[in-house]
Amino acid sequence: MCSVSILFDKPEDQRTAEHAELPLFFIDLNLDQVVDAIVGNYSEYELKPYFYFPLSDLTAVLYRQEVFHDLEITSLYEHVKYFAERMSEVRKHLKLVDKLYYKRQKEIWYLYAVEIYCDTVNKFKTDLSSTQLDSRGFLAFREYLTSYIASTNFKLLAEEVSRLKSDLENVKYRIIIQDNSFTVQNYEPGVDYSSEIEATFEKFKQGAVKNYLVKYDLVSQDMNHIEAQILDFVAMLNSDVFSRLEYFTNRNKNFIDETISVFDREIHFYISYLEHIKKIKDSSLQFCYPKISDTSSQGTSPKGTGKEIYDYEGFDLALAQKLNNLPTGQAGNNGQIVCNDFYLKDKERIIVVTGPNQGGKTTFARMFGQLHYLASLGCPVPGREAQLFLFDNIFTQFERAEKVENLRGKLEDDLTRIHSILERATFRSILIMNEIFNSTTIQDVSFLSTKIMEKILGLDLLCIWVTFIDELASFNEQTVSMTSTVVPENPVLRTFKVIRRPADGLAYALAIAEKYRLTYSHIKERIKS
Image 1 (cartoon, rainbow, N blue to C red):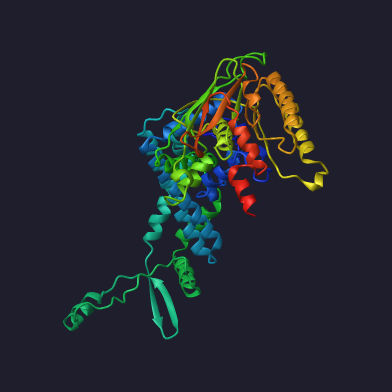
Image 2: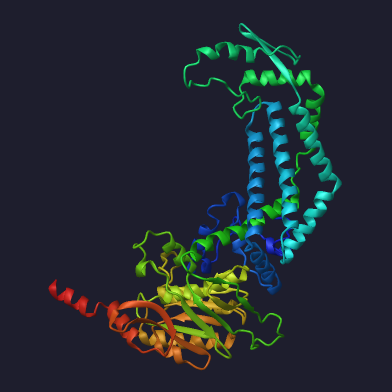
């Protein structure tokens, strides 16, 4: 990326990461699936790097939100889409020029590319001038575009394109074919016998017949060596205009303005996201622009306010896009996404999620992380209304398979990772933990979890912790208990709703029974065998 960005506010917001290794939290939260789905139709723009770097500056987040807001104006969106399509056509012409073999043919196709570019830029400026804009990004780009089109360089470029095209269209010649040779001459007016011949043979016409007329295009993509030779002869007969064409091509190798080129790429960050969520909105799910809770400018106290967060009717975007792509009846829970709410206020910092297995606890935790990450990019987020926290880092501690090569046991590996996280975390971090320490005894899990809880509270960071240890849910006034629920009449059925209420202990007992195959169904199966 270059420092001419307009839609991304600041040069530091334009970092690229084509070869960067994704952090673990990106995989744990299924953000890699989300990004792949968003950018899938726009591979030519290499958009993934834009989604790899969350913002840490509130002003930059709001800047992007403004651009998203403007693009929700139908007329502006259509203007931008047309501009993008025409710029894509320019690039296709330039790629074709690189593939073509014959020099004159390459020059004419290059002229076509410049003509499309000039027309597109002029039309886009006119479209933006007639559209109500509110975002700083679009207002700045409209001002730049107006100035660019008024510049001497662009005026000369557009005028030269117009003159060349007009002069080339006025080039006339004739070809005399005799035996196995042909001659190209300047056009000389003469008698056109076409109409007389047609009139003579009209009386022999019997109904509809096949039309054998061929439209001859001297600069088609499929030009052969005979056509290329004809074009060379035409150029020799009209040396002035073709010399100007050659000079024009050589002089304007980089005719696309850098800022316009950057805009064309950056705008697809916004377009790709809006198009992606539109498909999900069509299934009656809601997105909103979150308010941003930020402690970075509230003084030096790590115990400062500004950490009140909430989201109403939120959902896991990765799951929503997955179910949205499935045929009706093949998605879990009858193909419907279950939305959930959460909030933290005053001194509350940690959500402890308990409940039965397969009840949506991990999905809820992922949703929490996804919402904060998407908000930090300036994107609309799943939910009817939201206020989210602008973090400095997201850390995740999810259950992982044991790796033989690190020469550590499962428990030691878990402890090493959580120790590393807590060493790096600050009061502006977010921590998401999902059922850790499953490889040890209940007593050890309870002891270790208590120590970790004390450390987290000491750091004053926001955390969501999925666990079977119910005692953590009522640790102190900074912890909030949420549980996944079941259908009261049939506890086997999950509602996938996670609500604020005290842990009831039933989920833990059931989880242990499932783990050790001691449920009724498991025991019955073992007796039969």
